[in-house]
Image (cartoon, rainbow, N blue to C red; front, side):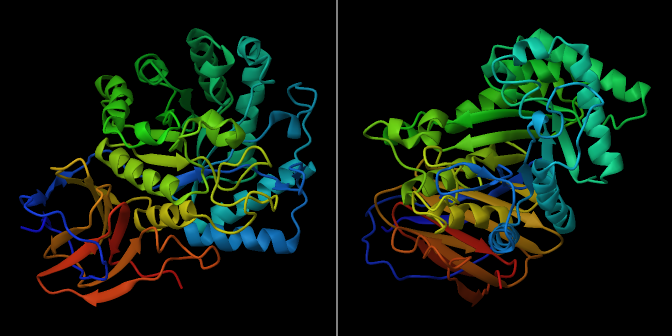
Length: 464
């Protein structure tokens, strides 16, 4: 018998253009809507570095009209739910002295260009500093109360003076755990910042963290719940194909979530503030990649990220932010394209097509559906948007094609758009979206998902 997957309460589409053969004699697998996740969902997004890049990889904060127009068009097409976009403190505070600020430096003007765009689009932003002082000295910078004052003043300026109320989260540094900062020092810094904001009538509802891993996220929920409005952590695979294909990602994600749950009665969002389908070190510097690893520019990397995204939904994670929007320089190549012109340049990578559909069709404010999972090779995620729109994503990691049968919920719109992301259709590098099949569904339809591929099914309108 051919393998069928029945997904209850979903929409229905038909597509049968694969020449792959089905694995015979498999029992029917059913994936149904078992309920909804109570965690507020913010949508998928990415990390963004502010400057444009010169061909040699050097930062260029003077965005030309043409280059910014390219970025704006792509950002609007992706339409992320949340963007992580911190600043380097020395961009406006070069001597690291509180009160001695240059808010109109070229670097900050570049930051404002993108903040204005995100505010206009209604996109939420996670900002703050990249470092309290410098990478080498952050562990000591957390001990200096003058930096507490400076961070609180940064929050106040961005929210109250600049009016960037869409900056919903602020944190004082990237990966404090990785700079050998002790948790006690980080915790005390956050308490002091909160108290300073209260004393000076600055915003007190923006602090988040701890932007690390291991046991730090649990400590944040346990010891800093008063100050933090959300909790976040970083998550990368180890960089090899065999491990990226394993089934332990959900368990690892729940290892982070289970630290927070006992201390999160208020159901604050938990954000995966950096994620990548290979180890962060190899992702940033692909020349160091192991022989059996994958590149961020590859189709397989993009498919892994779809698989990972579904598992983050299942874990109840509020948002996952890809590392990153575009490659940072010639040797730091994470992203959906590379602004240097090297490593394939500005041609859109398969990751762009996969991740942009996750951003667009699993938007901020959607209600994620708890889809039952009965096979390790097929993973299903879903969400309801508004009163009658639905999106479902199916990832087939098997070595053979599968058919998926979908039953439409009673409150669903009847026209669905089906995007088949596969090795022969990974995006052409220029178009801003994949082609789609449009069908008006009856009570049921069937869709074929090729081996090693993914399908997106949504009632939300296509990108025009």
